[in-house]
Image (cartoon, rainbow, N blue to C red; front, side, top):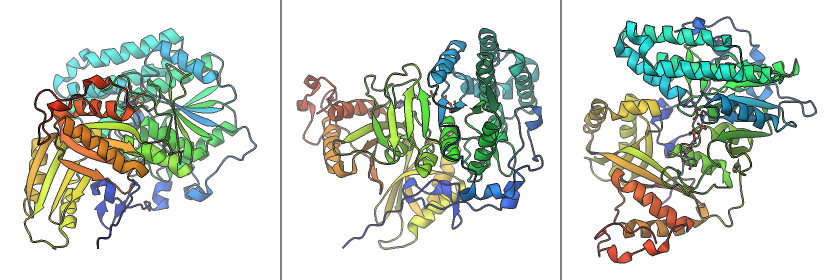
Length: 570
Ligand SMILES: Nc1ncnc2c1ncn2[C@@H]1O[C@H](COP(=O)(O)OP(=O)(O)O)[C@@H](O)[C@H]1O
Ligand SMILES: N[C@@H](CC(=O)OP(=O)(O)O)C(=O)O
């Protein structure tokens, strides 16, 4: 008789029994809350700004937040009958890429006169990428060449052109542009770009976009006020480039935004993506796409009615449109489905962004700022699953997989613990896991985008393998992809049956399968080279939107491998 134990984890910035959170495979993570000394947090809540005073900061200004604020249960919640802030509207880089787009976003916000929104913005267009690129170039270009870095010119031109076209006073960004150049010269001088400096560097994008946009709303006669998230209580871990929001954030943010709103109604325009490290007091970032998390954090902090995330697509789609252009919007999702989808690689939502929304039970609506009339996707705690089968297919490329077989005998205990303690020691995050009595297959987490570079460095991987080889036989498999099938728990057998039919028809052998306790997701690991084609075939089959004449099962040999070109779908 076999018993199965499901441990469902909540990704909290926590340390459990000495194991760092990030080393837990997502399926084995425990839920616990971080307990921090409130007197320390008290001294750290308020402080940095985008001005030169922040870089690179070692100490915080004196605290100005009362201790009572740190009690999350008692934090200041707006009363029901006031004219309180009602929703969050987050606009991503694609929505505010140009002056024209900023005008359209302002029109869109003003087309909801009944709402009193908090606005969260990302950096304009590709500014974050340009800042990162400029930083990389500064490391090796020499101080005297910094002014000639192409990406710096692109950033300057875009922001100066935008203020000019919106007729906003350019002084809202000139100090930032000057400081940005100084920072790049500092990097050139040091010939080094640390993750802390990198976070500070990219923060200029959000700091500038929000200043321009708030300036523009004010110019149009709509009273608004710009906020740097790290100045209003977004307290994070000190994991630069991928920080986690700490609990103290919620009361602090509520206090500040609600307090300011009640003392004079001005639409808050808040920088997405940024926070402040609780020990270092330096600017941190929440991982790529982190503005979604900023939005849901504000939604929960203020107990708002709805969180709107405005993108450049008609909502969460059945598949990445770059792989399958005719992917369809998914009208409804649960928080669980959306979280799995995001965690397993759908770029459309930040992997951690569903957590505050789920905790606060606040609906999240994903909408298209280029097509506001499209209904978008509504994400809530539960939904009618009676018709649901497969919801979405997600592809995560360039995954590294490890097969680890114990050198000991069957029935040994402590093997899993030893394996995961090695990942703990090396600070490497594990993604999906499949185990047998004497072996483990696992994938390394590429969702932490910047630290992803780490695990792709041959030396890092060699080190992992070296350590594991002390207790096991290890096979390192690179260039793999993970295809995740997000669907209805009640129909998992049907989903798997169809999926394996498609796999066989395409002659693809699965190298690892993993299904968590939530069962809204089954992940299949295949070769990178087979993955996109397979996703398209799966999409055709599950969403019945392809030309069935492409089906040709004669191409499949007895052992399931494709004889000629792969068949498309079943
Ligand atoms: N399942 C999916 N549904 C919708 N978009 C997806 C999906 N998978 C990948 N994407 C990509 O995510 C992009 C939107 O996310 P993102 O670029 O972060 O938006 P923004 O910068 O506006 O916040 C889309 O343009 C699309 O290319
Ligand atoms: N600007 C940051 C944060 C962000 O959320 O961006 P976007 O909303 O455009 O994905 C990034 O590019 O990662």
